[in-house]
Image 1 (cartoon, rainbow, N blue to C red):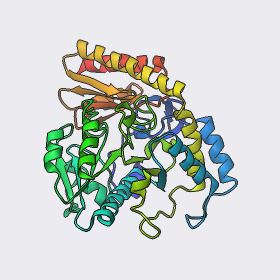
Image 2 (cartoon, rainbow, N blue to C red; image 1 turned 180 degrees about the vertical axis):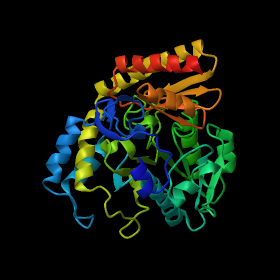
Image 3 (cartoon, one colour; image 1 turned 90 degrees about the horizontal axis):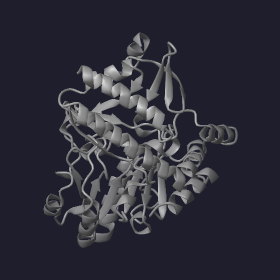
Length: 390
């Protein structure tokens, strides 16, 4: 850690541990200590660590072809795009390297599509307060948390913010310069905030009425995390665009922009690109991941384990006055407490459980989707002990 602090830029408040190995839902540090990983690389390792299907896909592909750029077609990229289209609303896919890049692509696509179709001036995108969409300048500008803006102003103009889960505020913000609405189906970094059942259908109606594109950022909540492959499936709506990343290749860098055929017309050759986007190795890995995550039996197990975990967290709420609320869907769960949650994160780590804290007082749980109920029980017991000492 001392060596790392000398050569790595000081951009992360890293926890004081050096990880060297992972298997399933567990990690081991340099001293050989074992941890239950209930963060999963921030909702990235949905299949856990060192999953054999991912390892096999990467090993095979890296021996055949690693990179040729998007000046050429490659089979793994085409096959992954076909699978994503088959399991979603989408007609076409664009591949990038990260969630921020996927959201950046969505912002560009919304603006260009709208101005090509309706004429100049339509460039505003309405976003939710407390949202998080990335760290590039454009996605930072779309993020509804001022703490992330400090020191980077002036931000990119054209983003309007309204309260999350407030259809009236969203409707009032639309004007003749609006081109899209961009929201997370569940706010992850915002504290595991789940909107009411009418929110996403209401946004769909507003977009239809005003010829706007509906963009759903599913980077954290997609790919099985909520008990369905995509979070929008809980509402029965059809978005125009969704963005994916994190879990798509179970730890390898990939982002994806899934779009309808109509929205896809906003991009033509020369308007958007990515040198490494959708390379053969990461798309081969992602195809292996998607094969597992899209299985109905796998998703049913995730939903069941999510209900089991939430029941355990609610039992903690009943026993500990410090807990304000336990909430979540599938295996994205939060425990809101009175006071600072950071010391509780450290206390859990000392007892062999890895979690993190958002919004200062929401303990967030993002275990691998392969987690067992026994492992969930272990975490509940440790939380019980930690909360009792608070």
